[in-house]
Image (cartoon, rainbow, N blue to C red; front, side, top):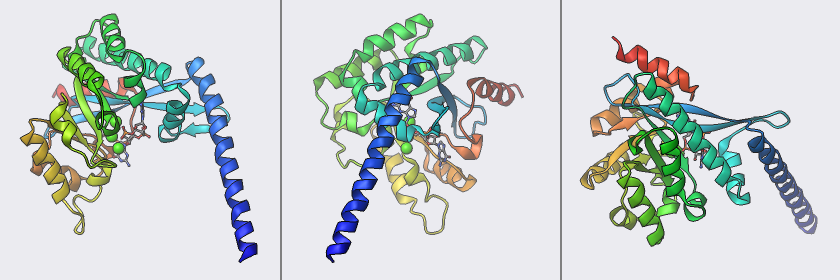
Length: 280
Ligand code: C2E
Ligand code: CA
Ligand code: CA
Ligand code: CA
């Protein structure tokens, strides 16, 4: 048992060292990539049910590093949040996303909108409202071109500053969506307390839809609750026709996922799809 204990300890130590080394490497490579503008923004189209033409899309970061290869945002965003890089990167994504939606609108897609993920730290540090306002003005856009996706962690236990920031963004016409709704938190009080517009049902709830053993009741309950509160509902991670049909039957408002559009893609490709689907 003593042997095992020591071996296990050595094993964990090695694992921790490796994880720490990976983290440090990610941080330094990411710092360089951000400085040299080597990140990319792709778009996942969103649709209203019954509409093959997209109504807009979600901006998602991509990073292909020369040495590390493709690194998932699920891995590098937490690193960026921990080391403070998320603020410049977040501003850069906002700038790219508004450039994209401005191009779409100039091309005739008048009501196009882009959704941008916003980290908790962008809310607490730096003036998000002023940043958004300046960026919209720079691109000649109204707030209706933008949707901000914030996670529940921003909203639960949030103070008066967050409420004020949300109210000001909303007054500009910006839509506020709650990302990854239903995972990790059990508090719902903020839904009543804060000015939000949309709930995004997390992929983990969508996954089970349309399977014989899948539980549709949870999704149906989220949609019903959202509508009772006069909130819109967006479903993410829709991968099958059965999931799409189940969500449509529940009265869900919008969806995104591989079923309709495959992997997130170039902004100009999304415009092309809008053109094809709307000029019948
Ligand atoms: P998220 O906001 O929940 O984004 C949805 C994720 O699901 C994306 O992964 C997207 O590519 C993926 N996805 C979309 N449709 C499907 C589908 O049908 N099936 C499956 N299996 N997956 C689908 P991605 O791009 O790897 O992003 C991961 C997370 O990284 C995002 O989760 C978001 O939390 C974060 N992230 C990405 N870009 C940004 C950004 O610019 N800023 C911030 N703060 N976070 C970002
Ligand atoms: Ca999101
Ligand atoms: Ca999400
Ligand atoms: Ca998610």
